[in-house]
Length: 208
Image (cartoon, rainbow, N blue to C red; front, top):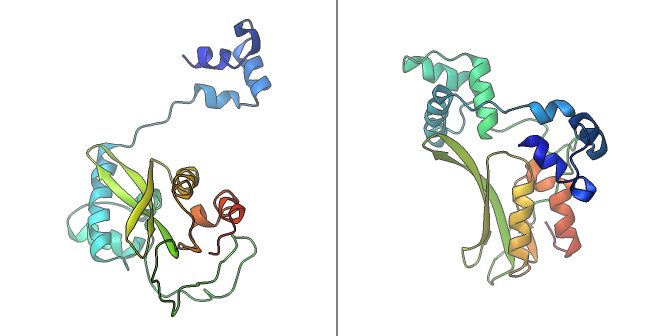
């Protein structure tokens, strides 16, 4: 099936080239052609559901405290496993952190907060976007939603099983097909501060 899909990209519809040659022409790593992603173990999914429930109650819990909480429930899980699953879910402890106001040129650009003291009294004045984690029976997905803050109307949404920026950009384009805000508010997550996302906003001259 993989070989057939690669052949479809070759002009003239011919499958005379080897997979090695096709990968070289397409700029695809040959190892990735044969790689089959491993499904998440059901034991990990069950543990992620527990972590999600507890994080909702105690968002200040980091890896150490979450691991200790699991052990109090009689569940054996090491710090590395909890750290891996929390990272996979996009969960991070919420607490005051030092030096937050100092920019780091190695990271994405930091944007100023524009809503302090602002009265939002009309539609399309301020839009906001956020990502949340949704549990499924055999896994999970991430949901991004874009909303008008004045009307609380959900302008667009998109689902993804990864935390890359693509599904956020897709939702943004769908929302901009409906209208255009004066200010777009998000957190400083990499999905919202990457060039792909901010480039779309800059293209329509929106403050954020």
